[in-house]
Length: 188
Image (cartoon, rainbow, N blue to C red; front, side):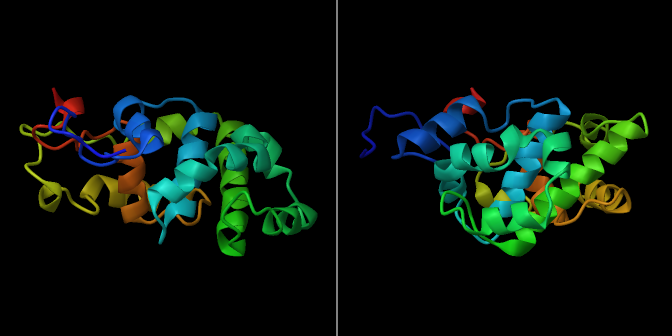
């Protein structure tokens, strides 16, 4: 799809229907619940070093491969499941990322068994809203004090592959921060 002068300005995603829908309907909207946040965290980890559009195009395959991102189901995965996933062309076949997804599912279950939730941990690091929108991508940080603190807490709870940059991307995707730039259709 080629943008026309009548098309709304988007921070990203213009020209691809799937990407536009993600921008308009998901990115920056609040996400709650352990399974939903675990899914986003896992997908952000798989995206590391790749295009987000690649992950979006494989999202349904990821959901099938990872038991709908139900933490308890994924926490039960074993080495045979890792090997199965390494053969699944529908997902990103990176052993470290697959193993991280399983480790993180186990960490979510451990949190729940301790009477806490991933939702509680993630949302406790929500920063104060900015007074003004970023003028452009150069005004959007790669990480913040809050994403660094979230990464540190998650690591202390047994999570892996949750660095400050990945956690800031999670914060953007899940509505903890609003980084739609000035003039963006979603910023109005």
